Picture 1: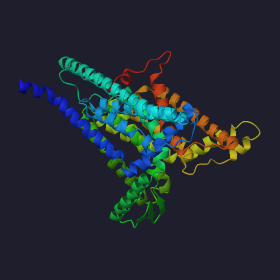
Picture 2: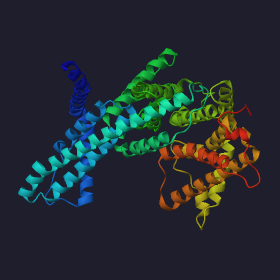
Picture 3: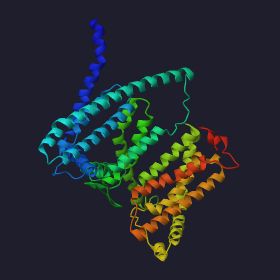
Picture 4: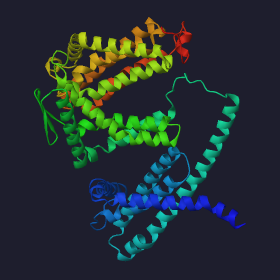
Length: 487
């Protein structure tokens, strides 16, 4: 009897110990001076501004300090969820929702305390008694509700796996990976969070220190290949000129996309944890590789600054082409050959035909400008310091051709030409809009948005022409299947 009782209590005791360890670890992390200065305090000020926007200005001036941050409640909530024996995807999703809940309640707390600041009795009642009780009950209710849902999800997942194992004893290893709704939702959410947090990391001294570290590592790597360089602070000095490595240079949107892929496609929590731990070294390595462009001879790269700025755009395009080839043809030599052919064709088209095509398209877009200022619009240069807008037409055509060769040749020439025409019309519309905005309103999009559209535009066109049916002709069976012969 005592042995059975001890065994029955073991999971609960283990969970309690893990919860305490997680909570204490989060407490310590959030109390670090650097974290408090660069993360907790700006987040607290943001909550204060949101509270004023939602509930109005406080009755008396109220200073939202670190004591108002809600990080204690947040550490308890997240610590309990991360300690619970559930899948890591479920834990991370629960922790994210818990953080949102705590921050939302704490924002309301700051707002209500500001509104009653003129009444000491009400202020003390809300601050000392009511709001601590509300936060405690809300966190407890959320955590227990999440635990119940996690248990049901694990039970259902176990039944599904058992039924699938009985029906299909051995899965085929060559089946291609699908673009799941989970990955799409996670990517959209993390990209939105990445954009919203831009003021934090673009002005962060810690991120700038990482940029300087990357500059030093790149300098050491260039010394190995015989290029005389030196790094001072966050500037890399080379024979081809100095290159400044800033927070924006290493804060690529590929980071949230990579994290979303890890969370969506990791089949075990160990693989997910390893994938997340690999984020920092992976993107530090990519940051170093980006700077190694200066070692290439001038015959290959006339403007290393341009290639350095466009590095992540080019890398993302190449990765998407490879993924499309493996999605269409499965893992094997056919997919590798198709991906290589697509990338090579895309580079050749963008390099050889890019400049004349971009010149004609840009000039045509300027001539379409409406009103008496059309001649001014036609002659007005873009505010394009990194060359992202000038590179847009050629890059999109090369990327479109690379995707088509890698995965969609069997869709037919009719669809290919239709998609190419749609792409050119979209480019014309974008350039006309940019001319009008620049000449009449003095507005230009952020270079990050231009580079994002450079990749997204051809993808949307390909999906449209491949998935929309024709009135008198159906898509060939090879396109509708996951695999298929090398077209």
